[in-house]
Length: 410
Image 1 (cartoon, rainbow, N blue to C red):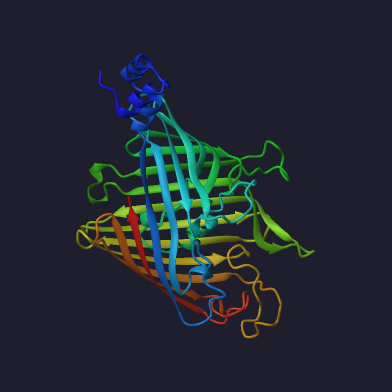
Image 2: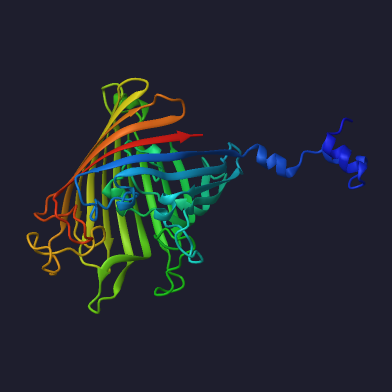
Protein backbone atom coordinates (compact mmCIF):
# COMPACT_ATOMS: atom_id res chain seq x y z
CA UNK A 1 0.00 0.00 0.00
CA UNK A 2 1.24 3.47 -0.85
CA UNK A 3 1.12 5.98 2.04
CA UNK A 4 1.14 9.75 1.73
CA UNK A 5 4.29 11.56 2.87
CA UNK A 6 2.70 12.86 6.09
CA UNK A 7 1.78 9.36 7.22
CA UNK A 8 5.32 8.16 6.53
CA UNK A 9 6.79 11.09 8.47
CA UNK A 10 4.55 10.43 11.48
CA UNK A 11 5.42 6.74 11.39
CA UNK A 12 9.13 7.62 11.39
CA UNK A 13 8.60 9.66 14.54
CA UNK A 14 6.71 6.82 16.17
CA UNK A 15 3.49 8.81 16.37
CA UNK A 16 1.53 6.27 14.30
CA UNK A 17 2.15 2.76 13.08
CA UNK A 18 1.95 1.86 9.41
CA UNK A 19 -0.36 -1.04 10.29
CA UNK A 20 -2.92 1.25 11.94
CA UNK A 21 -2.55 3.78 9.11
CA UNK A 22 -3.21 1.10 6.52
CA UNK A 23 -6.39 0.04 8.34
CA UNK A 24 -7.55 3.65 8.62
CA UNK A 25 -6.97 4.39 4.93
CA UNK A 26 -8.94 1.29 3.93
CA UNK A 27 -12.07 2.80 5.53
CA UNK A 28 -13.69 6.10 4.56
CA UNK A 29 -13.57 8.66 7.37
CA UNK A 30 -17.08 9.54 8.68
CA UNK A 31 -16.01 13.19 8.78
CA UNK A 32 -14.78 13.14 5.19
CA UNK A 33 -17.94 11.30 4.10
CA UNK A 34 -20.11 14.05 5.61
CA UNK A 35 -17.97 16.84 4.16
CA UNK A 36 -18.13 15.30 0.69
CA UNK A 37 -21.85 16.22 0.51
CA UNK A 38 -21.33 19.72 1.94
CA UNK A 39 -21.25 22.73 -0.36
CA UNK A 40 -19.86 26.20 0.27
CA UNK A 41 -21.33 29.20 -1.51
CA UNK A 42 -22.18 32.83 -0.89
CA UNK A 43 -21.81 36.32 -2.25
CA UNK A 44 -20.20 39.74 -1.74
CA UNK A 45 -22.72 42.60 -1.95
CA UNK A 46 -21.49 46.17 -2.62
CA UNK A 47 -23.20 49.42 -3.62
CA UNK A 48 -22.76 53.11 -4.35
CA UNK A 49 -25.57 55.51 -3.46
CA UNK A 50 -26.43 59.12 -4.22
CA UNK A 51 -29.29 60.69 -2.27
CA UNK A 52 -30.26 63.59 -4.53
CA UNK A 53 -30.60 66.89 -2.69
CA UNK A 54 -29.36 67.94 0.75
CA UNK A 55 -30.31 66.72 4.19
CA UNK A 56 -30.19 63.00 5.03
CA UNK A 57 -31.48 63.05 8.60
CA UNK A 58 -34.90 61.61 7.61
CA UNK A 59 -34.48 59.09 4.81
CA UNK A 60 -37.18 56.62 3.74
CA UNK A 61 -37.14 53.96 6.50
CA UNK A 62 -36.98 50.82 4.38
CA UNK A 63 -34.84 47.96 5.65
CA UNK A 64 -31.09 47.81 4.91
CA UNK A 65 -31.06 51.49 3.95
CA UNK A 66 -30.42 54.45 6.23
CA UNK A 67 -28.17 57.44 6.69
CA UNK A 68 -24.97 55.37 6.97
CA UNK A 69 -25.30 54.35 3.30
CA UNK A 70 -26.25 57.76 1.92
CA UNK A 71 -24.02 59.60 -0.57
CA UNK A 72 -21.12 57.17 -0.72
CA UNK A 73 -19.68 53.76 -1.48
CA UNK A 74 -20.74 50.80 0.66
CA UNK A 75 -19.86 47.27 1.57
CA UNK A 76 -23.33 45.93 2.32
CA UNK A 77 -22.75 42.34 3.36
CA UNK A 78 -20.75 39.17 2.77
CA UNK A 79 -22.69 35.92 3.05
CA UNK A 80 -21.04 32.55 3.56
CA UNK A 81 -23.33 29.54 3.16
CA UNK A 82 -22.30 26.08 4.30
CA UNK A 83 -24.95 23.44 3.71
CA UNK A 84 -25.90 19.90 2.84
CA UNK A 85 -29.31 19.90 1.11
CA UNK A 86 -31.79 17.11 1.62
CA UNK A 87 -31.37 14.33 -0.95
CA UNK A 88 -34.06 11.98 -2.30
CA UNK A 89 -33.77 9.41 0.50
CA UNK A 90 -36.83 8.66 2.63
CA UNK A 91 -35.00 9.52 5.86
CA UNK A 92 -32.88 12.32 4.42
CA UNK A 93 -30.98 14.72 6.68
CA UNK A 94 -29.03 17.89 6.06
CA UNK A 95 -28.24 21.32 7.43
CA UNK A 96 -27.64 24.94 6.47
CA UNK A 97 -25.62 27.76 8.03
CA UNK A 98 -25.82 31.25 6.53
CA UNK A 99 -23.26 33.60 8.09
CA UNK A 100 -23.29 37.37 7.50
CA UNK A 101 -20.32 39.73 7.75
CA UNK A 102 -20.49 43.50 7.28
CA UNK A 103 -22.77 46.44 8.19
CA UNK A 104 -26.03 44.72 7.11
CA UNK A 105 -25.32 42.00 9.66
CA UNK A 106 -26.18 44.52 12.38
CA UNK A 107 -29.46 45.42 10.66
CA UNK A 108 -30.30 41.72 10.48
CA UNK A 109 -30.65 41.84 14.25
CA UNK A 110 -30.31 38.13 14.97
CA UNK A 111 -27.68 38.61 17.67
CA UNK A 112 -28.75 36.70 20.77
CA UNK A 113 -29.28 38.18 24.22
CA UNK A 114 -25.69 37.19 25.04
CA UNK A 115 -24.36 39.56 22.35
CA UNK A 116 -22.78 42.82 23.46
CA UNK A 117 -24.13 44.77 20.48
CA UNK A 118 -23.09 45.64 16.94
CA UNK A 119 -20.21 43.49 15.68
CA UNK A 120 -20.64 43.35 11.87
CA UNK A 121 -21.37 39.62 12.27
CA UNK A 122 -24.65 37.73 12.49
CA UNK A 123 -26.15 34.32 11.89
CA UNK A 124 -28.88 34.62 9.28
CA UNK A 125 -29.92 30.95 9.28
CA UNK A 126 -28.65 27.86 11.06
CA UNK A 127 -30.89 24.81 11.05
CA UNK A 128 -30.95 21.04 10.78
CA UNK A 129 -33.15 19.74 7.95
CA UNK A 130 -34.93 16.39 8.28
CA UNK A 131 -37.36 14.36 6.19
CA UNK A 132 -39.89 11.84 7.46
CA UNK A 133 -41.30 9.41 4.82
CA UNK A 134 -44.96 10.35 5.28
CA UNK A 135 -46.81 10.54 1.98
CA UNK A 136 -44.71 12.59 -0.44
CA UNK A 137 -42.29 13.44 2.38
CA UNK A 138 -42.73 15.67 5.43
CA UNK A 139 -39.78 18.08 5.74
CA UNK A 140 -38.65 19.80 8.94
CA UNK A 141 -36.30 22.65 9.79
CA UNK A 142 -35.18 23.03 13.39
CA UNK A 143 -33.06 25.97 14.47
CA UNK A 144 -32.93 29.48 12.99
CA UNK A 145 -34.71 30.02 9.66
CA UNK A 146 -36.10 32.82 7.46
CA UNK A 147 -39.72 33.87 7.90
CA UNK A 148 -42.26 32.05 5.75
CA UNK A 149 -44.01 35.25 4.55
CA UNK A 150 -42.87 37.89 2.08
CA UNK A 151 -42.47 38.63 -1.63
CA UNK A 152 -38.86 39.77 -1.30
CA UNK A 153 -35.85 37.91 0.06
CA UNK A 154 -33.36 38.96 2.72
CA UNK A 155 -30.74 38.39 -0.01
CA UNK A 156 -30.61 41.49 -2.22
CA UNK A 157 -29.45 39.47 -5.22
CA UNK A 158 -32.60 37.32 -5.18
CA UNK A 159 -34.86 40.37 -5.50
CA UNK A 160 -35.84 42.22 -8.67
CA UNK A 161 -34.76 45.52 -7.06
CA UNK A 162 -31.76 46.58 -4.99
CA UNK A 163 -33.64 48.52 -2.30
CA UNK A 164 -36.27 46.79 -0.18
CA UNK A 165 -39.97 47.57 -0.08
CA UNK A 166 -41.84 48.88 2.95
CA UNK A 167 -43.74 45.61 2.97
CA UNK A 168 -40.49 43.70 3.42
CA UNK A 169 -39.50 46.15 6.16
CA UNK A 170 -42.57 45.41 8.33
CA UNK A 171 -42.53 41.64 7.85
CA UNK A 172 -41.10 39.16 10.36
CA UNK A 173 -37.62 38.17 9.28
CA UNK A 174 -36.10 35.35 11.32
CA UNK A 175 -37.39 32.77 13.79
CA UNK A 176 -35.85 30.29 16.19
CA UNK A 177 -38.08 27.23 16.24
CA UNK A 178 -39.44 24.29 14.24
CA UNK A 179 -40.96 24.51 10.75
CA UNK A 180 -42.76 21.65 8.97
CA UNK A 181 -43.58 21.76 5.25
CA UNK A 182 -45.50 19.32 3.06
CA UNK A 183 -46.24 19.20 -0.68
CA UNK A 184 -49.62 17.57 -1.24
CA UNK A 185 -49.19 17.68 -5.02
CA UNK A 186 -47.43 19.75 -7.68
CA UNK A 187 -50.08 22.46 -7.29
CA UNK A 188 -50.49 22.72 -3.53
CA UNK A 189 -48.10 22.91 -0.54
CA UNK A 190 -48.37 24.13 3.04
CA UNK A 191 -46.16 24.91 6.02
CA UNK A 192 -46.69 25.27 9.75
CA UNK A 193 -44.25 26.36 12.41
CA UNK A 194 -43.75 27.22 16.06
CA UNK A 195 -41.04 29.55 17.34
CA UNK A 196 -39.89 31.35 20.45
CA UNK A 197 -40.95 34.80 19.17
CA UNK A 198 -41.60 36.65 15.92
CA UNK A 199 -38.57 38.85 16.60
CA UNK A 200 -35.24 38.17 14.85
CA UNK A 201 -33.09 37.80 17.97
CA UNK A 202 -31.88 34.20 18.27
CA UNK A 203 -33.15 32.35 21.36
CA UNK A 204 -35.25 35.36 22.41
CA UNK A 205 -38.03 34.50 24.87
CA UNK A 206 -41.46 36.03 25.38
CA UNK A 207 -41.13 35.41 29.11
CA UNK A 208 -41.17 37.93 30.69
CA UNK A 209 -43.68 39.52 30.25
CA UNK A 210 -45.58 36.56 28.77
CA UNK A 211 -46.02 33.13 30.29
CA UNK A 212 -43.19 30.61 29.96
CA UNK A 213 -45.27 28.57 27.48
CA UNK A 214 -46.06 31.55 25.21
CA UNK A 215 -44.84 30.90 21.67
CA UNK A 216 -45.16 32.29 18.15
CA UNK A 217 -47.15 30.38 15.52
CA UNK A 218 -47.07 30.59 11.74
CA UNK A 219 -48.72 28.97 8.73
CA UNK A 220 -48.74 29.34 4.96
CA UNK A 221 -50.21 27.83 1.81
CA UNK A 222 -49.00 28.02 -1.79
CA UNK A 223 -50.96 27.30 -4.99
CA UNK A 224 -49.14 26.79 -8.31
CA UNK A 225 -50.89 26.87 -11.68
CA UNK A 226 -50.55 23.53 -13.55
CA UNK A 227 -49.20 23.08 -17.08
CA UNK A 228 -52.76 22.82 -18.41
CA UNK A 229 -53.29 26.54 -17.66
CA UNK A 230 -51.34 27.62 -20.72
CA UNK A 231 -49.30 30.81 -20.37
CA UNK A 232 -50.33 31.03 -16.69
CA UNK A 233 -48.47 27.79 -15.98
CA UNK A 234 -46.10 28.21 -13.06
CA UNK A 235 -47.90 31.23 -11.64
CA UNK A 236 -48.18 31.11 -7.84
CA UNK A 237 -50.55 32.41 -5.18
CA UNK A 238 -49.15 32.47 -1.65
CA UNK A 239 -50.70 33.39 1.70
CA UNK A 240 -49.36 33.32 5.24
CA UNK A 241 -49.85 34.51 8.80
CA UNK A 242 -47.45 34.87 11.74
CA UNK A 243 -48.51 35.66 15.30
CA UNK A 244 -46.40 36.01 18.43
CA UNK A 245 -44.38 38.28 20.69
CA UNK A 246 -41.77 40.82 19.59
CA UNK A 247 -39.73 42.58 22.26
CA UNK A 248 -38.32 45.19 19.89
CA UNK A 249 -38.87 48.90 20.67
CA UNK A 250 -41.90 50.02 18.65
CA UNK A 251 -40.90 53.69 18.57
CA UNK A 252 -43.96 54.67 20.60
CA UNK A 253 -43.97 56.06 24.15
CA UNK A 254 -46.41 55.38 26.97
CA UNK A 255 -48.05 58.07 29.11
CA UNK A 256 -44.92 58.25 31.29
CA UNK A 257 -42.60 58.71 28.30
CA UNK A 258 -41.20 55.17 28.43
CA UNK A 259 -40.56 53.14 25.24
CA UNK A 260 -43.27 50.66 24.30
CA UNK A 261 -42.27 47.23 23.00
CA UNK A 262 -43.97 45.78 19.95
CA UNK A 263 -45.45 43.11 22.21
CA UNK A 264 -47.90 40.69 20.64
CA UNK A 265 -48.27 41.22 16.90
CA UNK A 266 -49.83 39.56 13.87
CA UNK A 267 -48.54 39.73 10.31
CA UNK A 268 -50.76 38.89 7.34
CA UNK A 269 -49.36 38.35 3.85
CA UNK A 270 -50.80 37.57 0.41
CA UNK A 271 -48.61 37.51 -2.69
CA UNK A 272 -48.98 36.47 -6.32
CA UNK A 273 -46.46 35.97 -9.12
CA UNK A 274 -48.03 35.67 -12.56
CA UNK A 275 -46.67 34.62 -15.93
CA UNK A 276 -47.96 36.49 -18.99
CA UNK A 277 -48.41 35.80 -22.71
CA UNK A 278 -45.47 38.16 -23.36
CA UNK A 279 -42.22 36.20 -23.43
CA UNK A 280 -39.93 37.28 -20.60
CA UNK A 281 -42.57 39.37 -18.78
CA UNK A 282 -43.73 38.47 -15.25
CA UNK A 283 -45.99 40.43 -12.93
CA UNK A 284 -46.41 40.29 -9.18
CA UNK A 285 -48.30 41.84 -6.28
CA UNK A 286 -47.97 41.69 -2.50
CA UNK A 287 -50.12 42.84 0.42
CA UNK A 288 -48.57 43.10 3.89
CA UNK A 289 -50.52 44.00 7.04
CA UNK A 290 -48.90 44.37 10.46
CA UNK A 291 -51.09 44.66 13.55
CA UNK A 292 -49.28 45.52 16.79
CA UNK A 293 -51.63 45.40 19.75
CA UNK A 294 -49.56 47.66 22.02
CA UNK A 295 -50.22 50.67 19.77
CA UNK A 296 -53.37 51.85 18.06
CA UNK A 297 -53.95 51.25 14.36
CA UNK A 298 -52.04 49.08 11.92
CA UNK A 299 -49.41 49.44 9.22
CA UNK A 300 -50.00 48.02 5.76
CA UNK A 301 -48.52 48.19 2.28
CA UNK A 302 -49.60 47.15 -1.20
CA UNK A 303 -46.96 46.64 -3.88
CA UNK A 304 -46.95 45.82 -7.58
CA UNK A 305 -44.00 44.31 -9.47
CA UNK A 306 -43.06 43.91 -13.13
CA UNK A 307 -39.96 42.17 -14.53
CA UNK A 308 -38.98 41.87 -18.17
CA UNK A 309 -36.08 39.77 -19.46
CA UNK A 310 -35.23 41.78 -22.57
CA UNK A 311 -32.16 39.78 -23.60
CA UNK A 312 -30.02 37.03 -22.14
CA UNK A 313 -28.09 39.60 -20.10
CA UNK A 314 -30.44 42.60 -19.86
CA UNK A 315 -33.48 42.70 -17.58
CA UNK A 316 -35.77 45.55 -16.47
CA UNK A 317 -37.62 45.68 -13.15
CA UNK A 318 -40.20 48.06 -11.68
CA UNK A 319 -41.97 48.32 -8.31
CA UNK A 320 -44.79 50.63 -7.23
CA UNK A 321 -45.85 50.60 -3.58
CA UNK A 322 -48.37 52.37 -1.37
CA UNK A 323 -47.71 52.50 2.39
CA UNK A 324 -50.18 53.46 5.11
CA UNK A 325 -48.29 53.71 8.41
CA UNK A 326 -51.07 54.27 10.92
CA UNK A 327 -48.74 53.66 13.87
CA UNK A 328 -45.27 54.95 14.88
CA UNK A 329 -43.64 51.69 13.73
CA UNK A 330 -41.68 52.94 10.72
CA UNK A 331 -41.49 56.70 10.98
CA UNK A 332 -41.79 57.06 14.76
CA UNK A 333 -43.70 59.91 16.38
CA UNK A 334 -44.16 62.84 14.03
CA UNK A 335 -45.34 66.45 14.22
CA UNK A 336 -48.92 67.62 13.65
CA UNK A 337 -48.14 70.88 11.86
CA UNK A 338 -46.17 70.35 8.62
CA UNK A 339 -45.59 74.11 8.34
CA UNK A 340 -44.15 74.40 11.85
CA UNK A 341 -41.61 71.63 12.57
CA UNK A 342 -40.93 73.10 16.03
CA UNK A 343 -44.51 72.84 17.24
CA UNK A 344 -43.76 69.69 19.22
CA UNK A 345 -47.36 68.48 19.01
CA UNK A 346 -47.81 64.77 18.28
CA UNK A 347 -49.44 63.91 14.97
CA UNK A 348 -52.66 61.97 14.67
CA UNK A 349 -53.06 61.20 10.96
CA UNK A 350 -51.07 58.36 9.35
CA UNK A 351 -48.05 58.54 7.10
CA UNK A 352 -49.08 57.77 3.53
CA UNK A 353 -46.20 57.14 1.14
CA UNK A 354 -46.08 56.39 -2.58
CA UNK A 355 -42.83 54.73 -3.63
CA UNK A 356 -41.71 53.89 -7.16
CA UNK A 357 -38.52 52.04 -8.08
CA UNK A 358 -36.97 51.30 -11.46
CA UNK A 359 -34.01 48.94 -11.91
CA UNK A 360 -31.87 48.08 -14.93
CA UNK A 361 -29.77 44.93 -14.58
CA UNK A 362 -27.07 43.90 -17.04
CA UNK A 363 -25.05 40.76 -16.34
CA UNK A 364 -21.83 41.64 -18.14
CA UNK A 365 -19.51 39.50 -16.01
CA UNK A 366 -19.91 35.84 -15.13
CA UNK A 367 -21.34 35.27 -11.62
CA UNK A 368 -21.86 39.03 -11.19
CA UNK A 369 -25.13 40.92 -10.72
CA UNK A 370 -24.68 44.56 -11.81
CA UNK A 371 -27.58 46.99 -11.74
CA UNK A 372 -28.54 50.64 -11.63
CA UNK A 373 -31.59 51.80 -9.68
CA UNK A 374 -33.62 55.00 -9.34
CA UNK A 375 -36.06 55.31 -6.44
CA UNK A 376 -38.62 58.02 -5.61
CA UNK A 377 -40.54 58.21 -2.32
CA UNK A 378 -43.35 60.78 -2.05
CA UNK A 379 -45.41 61.82 0.98
CA UNK A 380 -49.15 61.75 0.33
CA UNK A 381 -50.25 62.76 3.83
CA UNK A 382 -49.82 66.52 3.36
CA UNK A 383 -46.78 66.70 5.61
CA UNK A 384 -43.04 66.53 5.12
CA UNK A 385 -41.59 63.07 5.57
CA UNK A 386 -38.00 63.26 4.29
CA UNK A 387 -34.86 65.40 4.22
CA UNK A 388 -33.70 67.88 6.82
CA UNK A 389 -30.61 67.90 8.97
CA UNK A 390 -32.34 67.07 12.29
CA UNK A 391 -33.91 63.68 13.00
CA UNK A 392 -37.67 64.03 13.47
CA UNK A 393 -37.80 67.35 11.62
CA UNK A 394 -38.16 66.52 7.90
CA UNK A 395 -38.45 69.42 5.46
CA UNK A 396 -39.29 67.68 2.16
CA UNK A 397 -42.14 65.65 0.72
CA UNK A 398 -39.93 63.84 -1.80
CA UNK A 399 -36.85 61.65 -1.56
CA UNK A 400 -34.82 60.68 -4.65
CA UNK A 401 -32.07 58.09 -4.66
CA UNK A 402 -29.80 56.75 -7.42
CA UNK A 403 -27.81 53.61 -6.64
CA UNK A 404 -25.45 51.15 -8.31
CA UNK A 405 -25.33 47.60 -6.95
CA UNK A 406 -22.65 45.00 -7.75
CA UNK A 407 -22.87 41.48 -6.30
CA UNK A 408 -20.47 38.60 -6.90
CA UNK A 409 -21.92 35.14 -6.26
CA UNK A 410 -19.62 32.20 -5.61
